[in-house]
Length: 443
Ligand SMILES: Cc1cc2nc3c(=O)[nH]c(=O)nc-3n(C[C@H](O)[C@H](O)[C@H](O)COP(=O)(O)OP(=O)(O)OC[C@H]3O[C@@H](n4cnc5c(N)ncnc54)[C@H](O)[C@@H]3O)c2cc1C
Image (cartoon, rainbow, N blue to C red; front, side, top):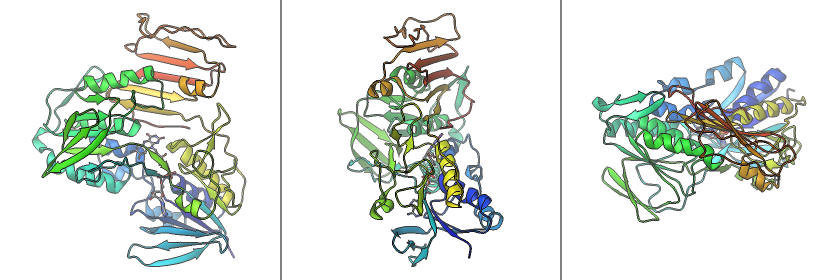
């Protein structure tokens, strides 16, 4: 009898696991559960679909149910959520689209349930004009709202000036972005792209807390010079809605009127099912796995944003929710669950984001993360422009490799920052044409 492999989650890690498992084991029965109506789509493209840079919704899909069911011979259960894992019986319990329930046995199980959004406890945050940008249904809802509030004849007013996106006229439509991380900034850029004013509210003292502050500063400049507004060190305390308009009251007393808000205050690993089943979690709160993506239960694997990886710079266990590692770990889990042995070496957390003509990127440790890890940090900057500014001049502190500090200016076409005695860390800010690619990661 062929082995039955059950996979929970059908996006980056889950879909990769299913396809790889089929390639590895032609005879296995593979069943994939996905609680949403859509599977195998590029979350990374969602903001660009909102902005029109990705012109059709179909372009968001990496694969489709037909390919999975017919080409890969995978039983696909969409709109079907797994609600419990019984490890003793080796069974999952599920609930289907019409509320019907059932259970299914497994020989091997892969948990690829991704993340859940962090929702701050703010009165009115569940109001009618506040949206997530995480799934296809989320962007459907955003597009429906935009269709309602955006005058069609006011579209296409944006223009570019050199490599920068500049708003000549605005549509009068106002958006609020709650959270200044990658996703919030990508959404801000894309709304600006459509002539919508964007206010980004971030509780910390810098945008994109995963990068060092001076690496991110040009991104803030980019948003502001495109006509957007950035409010740091402040948070939304309350939201009120009257008819078609809403107001966010910030902790500082500021008020931000908006027609559409996007909530992007981060995610945490979706581990509830695993936790209830008694599968071991790591110190980060994500599922603990070994290099073969095995959990504490030898019949159960985990892959993607819901589990830990080893950081190649520090050897520490980390939880870095990025698509590159999620796909890679999905493939490894799929391969191994289908009876072979592939190893995951670790991750570097490589990411790059383009916002209003500026691109910030990072890999390895940031300066602040290296300091937190107790590394004796040296920092150097380099740029291609001879006309370097003193503004970002830094002197290398003691380090076994004594890296030099080179003055650089963000007005350079290219400026990079390197930190850490082993040069395992590298941060870069690039000034690229506005039509360059969006964010991608290679983990
Ligand atoms: C707007 C946006 C932009 C992004 N941009 C980038 C980028 O540019 N670069 C980058 O590297 N990363 C980016 N990411 C992050 C990237 O998308 C994730 O790292 C990646 O999708 C994680 O894959 P995953 O399979 O682990 O989880 P997910 O993609 O979250 O998939 C998990 C799936 O599991 C399903 N599920 C959960 N629980 C159950 C259950 N009980 N039963 C059945 N199904 C269940 C969920 O419905 C979900 O579809 C972005 C994310 C978003 C939201």
